[in-house]
Structures are given as C-alpha cells and as structure tokens.
Length: 200
Image (cartoon, rainbow, N blue to C red; front, top):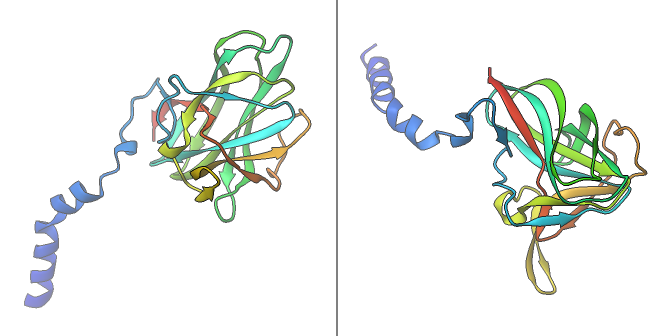
C-alpha cells in the first residue's frame, strides 16, 4: 500500500511539469478566426495553381473543434474561372483518404479572400484541405518548411520539402476517396485555411 501511495504521490507532484512539457500550443486558438492548422500564415508567398489538378495540404486539429468556413486568398485572378474547396481525412501513410466535406465553388475571377460555408465537427488528428480549379489562379501560400509532414528529399539544388499532395483531376465535384496522389516538392504550397467556430 505504501509503495503504491508513493508512486501516486510522485506522479501527482510532477503533473504540472508533465503538462508544461507536453502542452500543444495549437490546442488553444481563437474562435471566429482563420487558422492554418500549424502551417504558418500566407504572407508574401504565392502559389501558381494549374488547371485540373487537385491539391491537398495538411491541417492538424490538435483538439476537438468545429469549423464553419474553408478559405483561400486569391492574389492573381483568372477571369471567368472557379475553384472548389474541401477537406479529407488522413488515409494510410499520411495520404488524403475519405472526403469529409466538399464546400462548393468560389470564384477565382477576382482577387481577395474567398470562402465557402461548412459545418463540420472535427476530432483530433490530421486532415487535408483540398482545392481544385478549372483555371490557373495564383493564391497566397505557405512556406513548405513550416509544415513538413510527408518527407524531405534531396533535389538537384539541395533539400526540398514534400508536404503538398496533388493529382491530375478534371474540375468537378471532389472525388471520394481522394485517389492516388504524387508528392509536390515545391518551395510553397496553397495557403488553405479554416475558420474556427468553436472548441469542443
């Protein structure tokens, strides 16, 4: 009895230290704001999209949460064209898998913040934000080295980060499941975001 009591007492004494060392900053975020899931902020970086390619970028939900918007910022418009925003669950070996939500279309014919309304409750884990367009707009982007998940590969000009997945996909409603992608080793990835409705 005394031995068990001593162990429990010691665990309790170090509980605060444990919490301090394992605290996840991404678990405390402001509701009503846009959030990248740990991939930084889309500032001066941009990403030139290709028509009829489906892209997926990582989003880490560090705790249970609900989201009410998917968003991207168009920095160079593509007249008369649209894009679709969505989200996928993480599949096997950190590849996008099952479709969570197809948020619908946005116009990429003008610049600015573009959003679609969704209503999704997320459990903790890795998700993939997705975008596909019938045009080739340029969008605000994240630097790849801020959110490397897939791998780092040695390229001819040094090391490159493989965070964004892509696949050829004729513009349409989002496929379910995502399908077989290839790694996109670029300097930047599309700056896809969600708006946080509540911490659940």
